[in-house]
Image 1 (spheres, rainbow, N blue to C red):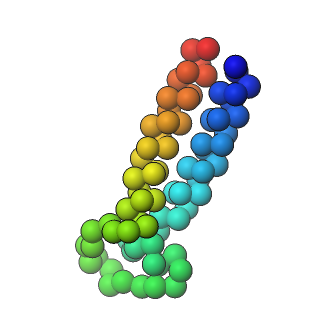
Image 2: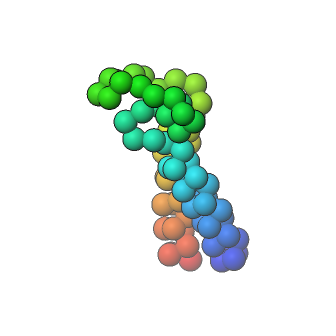
Length: 73
């Protein structure tokens, strides 16, 4: 059981690292692929960028829960 928890925590952490690196500060997801936006211009998250943002939050909660269960176990 401990091996499964450790493996799950490692898998979630790798996916979480990838999702965090996909989010570029100050610009949308298009900035990671060559697009540019005016600095200081606020725009709501839409499409893939919103999915990446929401997935990052969910996986962070899962990671913390796995860490807590792994600590207690």
